[in-house]
Length: 393
Ligand code: NAD
Ligand code: MG
Image (cartoon, rainbow, N blue to C red; front, side, top):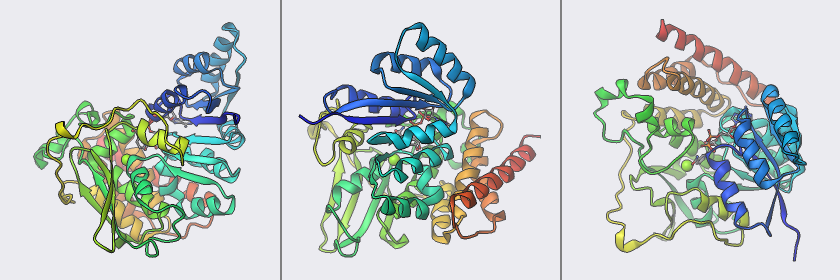
């Protein structure tokens, strides 16, 4: 029997991180938890370290890492505790497989480090592709990293495409149909959106997720980021992707072929399915997710998204078409705006307003290297913060 794969989880204390550990725990003969990494939640990480006894635990926050180190010592565990961004990147390069599940721009450098080490990378952190898609995909090719999508839609598309596809055209693909539920405000009167609360925005009708992606789902910025992600992952032209509303989240996305066939991947809205799929690919393993019961499903409906209700979706598609630094700028503005909404400094509809204004102010440049991306990210955050201040005073 072959040795278990050494798995590092970036963002192990989050929603995707916990689901990954749940799947890994079902297959100890296949996966050995090598390193667990998070931001500052040392208490949850301590519980995970106690259960999985990895070689390494890393926290981005130095003082939280200190607390974890003391607690690990007290429990007489053998896990070595490291701190800081450099350690995150170093650990990402060491394992066989890396689950990239840090939220936001903070995921870019450690995920890229895993790619550059030629590791198998299970990509949940869509923001790295949004920010630096061309550099990221170049690195995947250059370092022969195996990149497998975790985002349920992209995992579904991957499952519906032929293996070793050289291009969508050669595979006879007419369109990728990217589905999205429309989130909690699909039918809320548009005039009421300015006063929705954080709790309402985070209450996704079908999926249980971290706060940032939940708000992105409510604005449909998430679908916009996924549109950009899909363009990079599958080398798709803008006209090769359609976004379709599908409120039940049963069909996770589809691929339409030249002959009129449409292949779809269906399943429960539970991230353990795409996670298990990518972890075991090309095998199939038990994920803990129940099968769909078609006799009890009820109606599956589909419609076109309304870009007036969801301006963030339109902004992301536009930024993707413009190319260069536009998507990195939009992503950074959005992270700041979502953070301001979550801390109740701005209203829900201000998110789109800030994103639109920051993108408008931005002079698009070519993205030559990661430093350019980071500079655009920093500049866009500054512009967004300025706008947030004018809205709050
Ligand atoms: P989450 O908020 O639940 O967890 C985020 C994780 O990232 C935590 O472990 C946190 O400690 C870590 N983190 C945050 N900032 C960090 C930093 N500066 N350094 C190191 N670690 C840091 O988020 P989530 O819902 O699990 O989402 C994670 C990623 O997966 C996001 O990019 C999201 O878009 C993507 N994704 C999530 C889902 C889902 O169902 N939750 C589905 C598809 C894609
Ligand atoms: Mg998704």
